[in-house]
Amino acid sequence: MRAGHERGEGRMGTIVGLLLFVGVILGIWNLGPVFWADYNFKDKLNEIARVGRHRSDDDVLRMIMREVSDNKLEGYITGHTCKITTLETRRTILCEYDRTVEILPGVRHTFHFKDLADQPLL
Image (cartoon, rainbow, N blue to C red; front, side, top):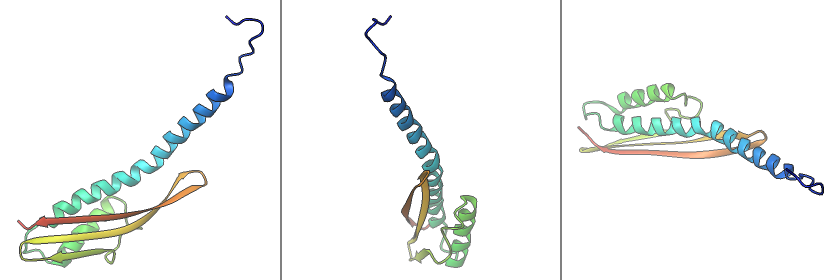
């Protein structure tokens, strides 16, 4: 119960806290898929880098582009943004790309992803 002289003016702090909470949730909602797609793509790059020497760099690039399509990264990664280096005992794949995301309405940020897979050949 309130005393007669108390007015209950703590609403502004609650509204600001609620707006911050909603902003954080919205930011996570918008950023989560971006980083999840990059994480999955990087994991697949490591698998692709391990395929045997009998696979040519063109075959490896086709495998990479299939993963680009599966992770819905077609607008960001092309055959020219990935560099494949195959040596006698290892393969290195480097894919760099930029992705612009609207984190909150009116707030955009460009993230630079540099995915490197350096694996021994099986």
